[in-house]
Image (tube, rainbow, N blue to C red; front, side):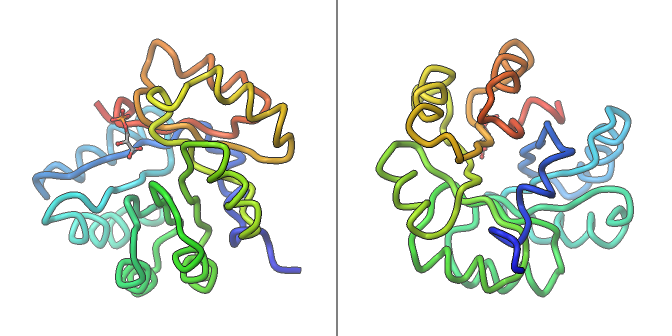
Length: 189
Ligand code: 3PG
């Protein structure tokens, strides 16, 4: 049977920490990967927010792909999904979603994590057969209390909160029943 969201929950299940990395200078990428591995973090989400993002993703896949799972973040259109497929990346993350985007993500066969920030979006995600979701921007959208409420309403939905999470608060998020992983830029700094 086909796995939900191409197996994102299985992929995240042994990855409680997802570093969200924005590369401004390509020379930075090898050191960033080394830092993550030295902290026993074996995955990286590289955002599509700079002119060198794709080069960074390609480089990590090519030189470090055997040691680290490489995700593409900030996916918002089909062109990006196609490019990520060409590079054979390991997972896809979107800050939000539309039904059209979900169709493209699902067809990619790559595990994917769509983003939500409120209850209506969670309902819409469930309607699109998605029940493992990025909660973004987590702190601005209600943080721990919002997630506790979501658990009452949607006990089967799991979240990866990101946005405003850091060394001081990540453990409280991971303790929640409906949180599978937490993400953030603090992990690679
Ligand atoms: C993301 O895309 O998940 C966020 O930009 C990460 O947010 P942070 O910098 O607050 O961790």
